Length: 347
Image (cartoon, rainbow, N blue to C red; front, side, top):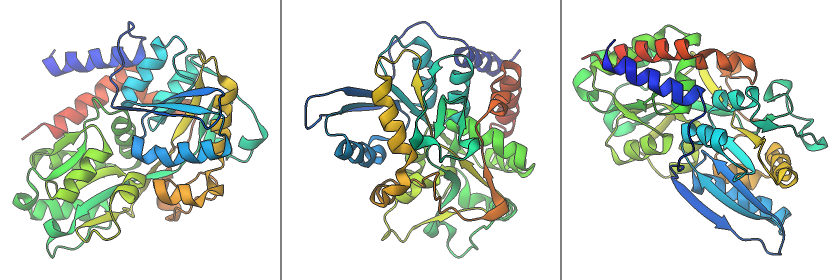
């Protein structure tokens, strides 16, 4: 068995089984004090601090007695932290909806019900323990300067053709997720593979062109804006809208027309939470983001209620439920990552 097979198997074991208690690898952390003395809400989330801050301040405007301690970590860190948590966090928010679903399936979440969440679509919740509150597409981010007269690809076939015909222009300047370390990247990759065989063609081509691998959308966005990358594939559209300036003439966000994978960001209350009532208030607030257009504008999120996403049948919205557990099976995950590595690492 080759070394990377062993590494993948170890990664699978870390995801599927509870890890021994260890320190959480925190990317960012901030305390938002309350106006009045009251409860404190501890949130563990994958959403970048600057992206989620407008939501916290809006929530505190309606609930001035609640202070919020917000901690940011990667989706895999968030997942594993819930397994080993002893009541440190009251609410868990993640873009890796498959990992969140597994936490619910394995008994690591508690139920919540209120009149505020009854308006969610049926597929946007599961077991009254996990709740979706945004719809966020995976998009293609392009440097207009790097494209330099080439047509903007409208679908994956166009993208494959442009890359094949201009290999030296794009060599070393394409970015996408490292699905071995990015839970969201793995989710997008598995869903893309279900939608079209062009996914594997694209991965092989990117591998031939020395693709660069990243953990996060924000990292790829920054590198396209700086010109370090020409193209970033499967970047979160919400982050792109929030982080790229309307005045920036070099960056273009493209929703591919053959299919556009739509991730829903989810929230759950850990089984160990000692502050479930306050967590429920935040879930109610998140479920009604459509009532706060200022927050929608500031975050780039599209509320799951009254979503303004367009694309009709080309929108492939990932729905909550047990189907999301398929690719988290140990052997299926190992085989998928092995196939991905064989495609992306061959030169």
